[in-house]
Length: 601
Image (cartoon, rainbow, N blue to C red; front, side):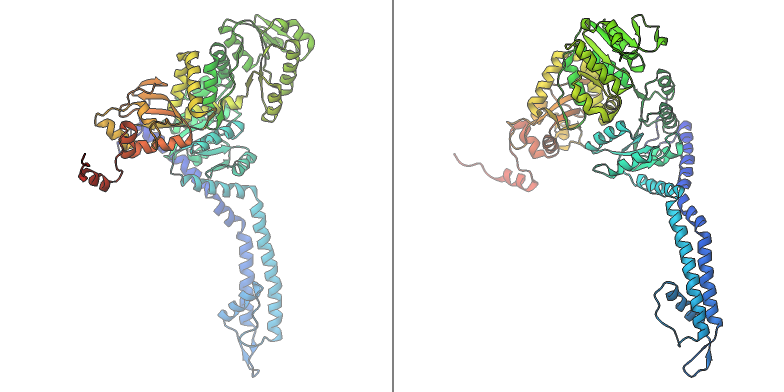
């Protein structure tokens, strides 16, 4: 069992001290890398600066040695200050004039030579500087230094995202909609450029770097006290394993979420502190099983996992019995076939490779060939899944299956984001987009622990319960999920209601979910879950009695969130919505109202 981190000045245990020392060593090396830009400038510009300074010094010395003449023709020598002054405005092309007396021909000849020498020196120095600015190592060092400063200035809790592909982009926008900070690492510089051009509310630090390097993770904030989670979303699962290892060894108290599709790699990840892993193929199979048993529950799950701004998806009607055909027996096909068979369904697998002959019901052949599909007799099937790794093949399989049996329930796998319009035009019943599945799952875990708890508790409530909850949500909030937030009923976070409950006075959920301007009008929000200690109440009724310390998961409009905050923080508003009595909000008016005599009857 891990040792807890030191809190409030408590002495650190030996494991904690070892982790802190390791992080400090890595951070020191990363700081040295971030300072490399200064040393690179000094090293590359050393010779040009020496040449330029040498030319200037020789020019000044020559002016002091060559004699001039005053207005009477008497010889006079220029001092070092005057010579330095003349060469300063001459070398900088300003050219004020000849001082203190007009130059002799010897002096003018020397100044002419000095002008050409300084022009050559400046050209050499400027050319070296431009070459340095174009140097890849210098630009990387400069970007690292700038990135390090931005991360060090972060004061709010942030999420470290490694990998900014389509999954990272979706997760970033979902976190940004919640007002959460995040930092990005990705090996591809073009993705970091896209991050800087994206429309986020806050400035998002991003660095093109190899996530396998623990030093880069330290620079990105792994050792930062405000780092609240690490997410590994690269397409290279070995790189995701490296991130899990580094986070578990250097910051074991920080939760880690990793994308993985390989079972052996998933087991290797779990050896490092048990991180949360997301397998999109396994999740798709679980979601399809949920859709088969409880369509309304699946509809609610996908709606809440889609994040703020999502519209209510359509409720499908997948067949609960019959014969299914799955094309492709790769990682997705194996997971999906196992899940369908666990539901008692008959499944035939079509796979071009003969090495998958361990399956009892397997048709070996290319599913894109018409003769192969004829062997499985799609006219007798109820469901068809095109799950190969090629979008063109999947689209052609869907079209062929529809021609053979228009009543089929069609599932398909979309591999490239650019092909989304094509799959949308095909009107697939169940579409697997691995990047979206992973992004939605990670969002559900990071948005608030209450949402993750709700999603785990929800399937056990039944499909009829889920359908009723969807009706409540649409009645109060419409078909557009505007906001999802957490409320903790404590004196610190909800002073008006927290003190009320601490004093032993009663308040129900229906009391506080009222419009602070008209208590007869309910707020456009629904409480999805109330957590009291370890006991969770899912979708409580309005007569649910609240207690101090309760945590609420609320879904609704942004305006309803602001109204609820007023109820929880302002005592006069709380008094009105709970009891119906209007009381003055200021101390002076409360005193005056107590002294005002009641009118005579």
